Amino acid sequence: MEKLAERKVCADKYCSYVISAAQALEDYIASDCRFINLKKGQMMYVYSKLKPADGAGIFWSGSVYGERYVDQMGIIGYFPSNHVNETQIFKKKTIEMDTTMTDFFCD
Image 1 (cartoon, rainbow, N blue to C red):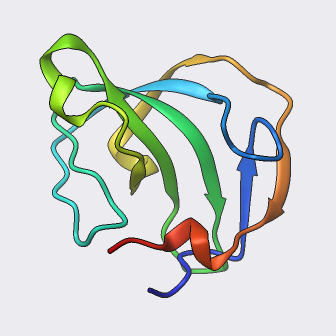
Image 2 (cartoon, rainbow, N blue to C red):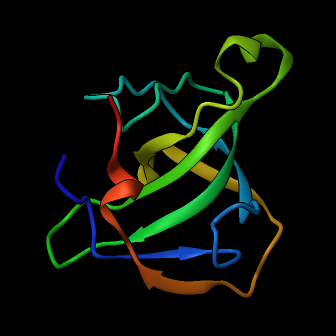
């Protein structure tokens, strides 16, 4: 799979801490295994934000949470940032770093 971006922003050097919480503004159907489906109103945790090259789309990675979505909890994937609204910022100071091929790996 090709990289979606060369740089990303995370809360820590491993991208294991949550940057923010967000709520889906509309449904989104994942285009491939790197992405996750979103349902309007669904809440999710954001773990990283890709830094796009000029003209590229902006994607964030995260996972859904909530009792209604137990079957999807723990699955981390990308989604378009314009499909969500950040509802709470947990980490204001972030770290910018290079992406790697493993950031975009799926089988």
